[in-house]
Amino acid sequence: MQARIGGRPRRCDYASIMTATEARSQLHRLEAERLDAVEAGLGGNTLYMTDLHNDIAASRALFIGLAVTEIAVLRGQLGDRLQG
Image (cartoon, rainbow, N blue to C red; front, side, top):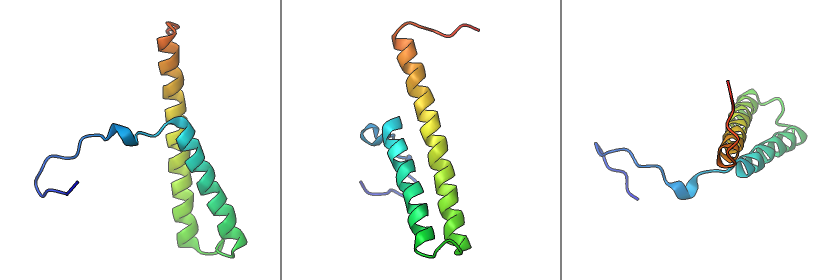
């Protein structure tokens, strides 16, 4: 798809929506990258490590949000609504 200047923003591509399982895998890959970076001597590279830390934090938040949402949807489908 080509970008259009002044055009409407792209609609959500539902084929690329991430599941909690996929988000968890992404989080694990980033954590493995952090370990590899430290082992490779990049632990002192503040810019790289800060960027990686921020990516891990965002990935963790995404995973938690998706997991909670998937649990809530499942509970709703089972008819077990929360009270309160």
